[in-house]
Picture 1: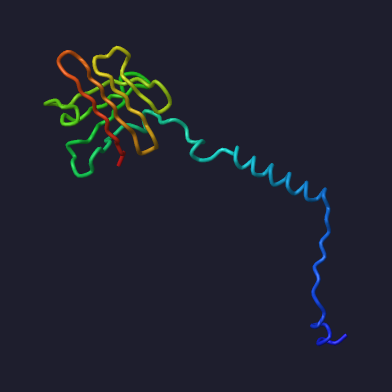
Picture 2: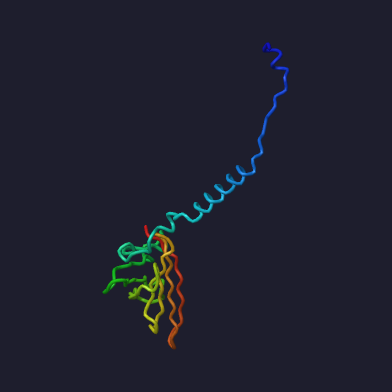
Length: 149
């Protein structure tokens, strides 16, 4: 056969149907997908925030240093001292709150405290600060999103 005769022949693709092989390929694909779905991801692998990781300045407004919050280690393990700036709590001076860890990455004042405060870490550099004061003299709600520089 010459090269010109070979080029005039139609090409043919031969397929072999093997139902067992197709089932095996599908099963392996399904198992690999399930394994990837259940594998630990870096987001899930990160442990809860430790008190030492939270200590420092937290910024509410990058353009206003007077609105910075300060987080310090508390008097005992798993407690925080949070100093809220005066302008955010509506007071003439800043207020300091002692918070206890109530869940991984979440801290709150003791139940029954006159001012209810929570500090919840949403990611390694982001948190939210909630303050609720409800007494006969005043009512105030503060909800601030914070970023650690």
